[in-house]
Image 1: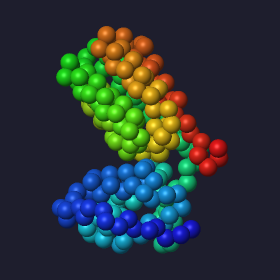
Image 2: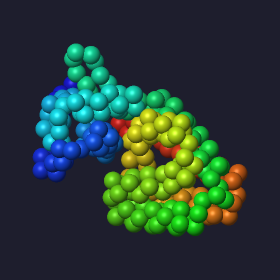
Image 3: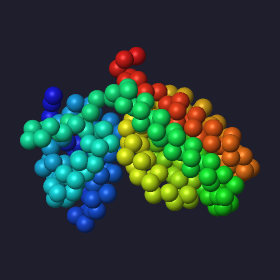
Image 4: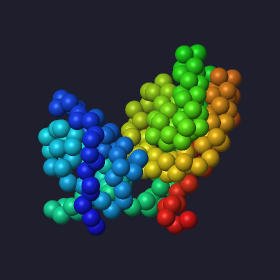
Length: 221
């Protein structure tokens, strides 16, 4: 175990930062590898980095623990979790089922504006993949898949995704560092099927997109 090196030169967040924003900043720092598996996370140092009090940082770390991104030992330390293949597979299966459900329910019900926004997100995703910008690719991918989920408005489904999505995003980091072009094509097929009203095929593609994510730790290769 070793203490985390706090990134230097990062932007200081406004002190009115909401708890959700603190959570997202820390979540993203783990997903993108800023904080790596085994690093110790100290709430005081994180609070100084973000420019906030320790309270929202502690709350964010608790949420990250439920997502499996950190491991907390009461009274001792909080560290970034290692990439556990079984945990990723379990989360991936749940995430795949949730997106399959959202797409099945929203096929033929999305407005033209929603479909256009999905196509725009996929264009941004393709550009990011071509440029080797994994962070931008993850952001565009999340924006694309969020559209049918948000349109459905199922809060229980959204809560499940909120809990397990971060763990799966670390596996996506690996995918988008490799053959991201295949994901571009899968996105295009998904969007076309949604627009055409083919619920069964659209749901199947949505499931496959998520269920095909690699779950192994890159260090095992």
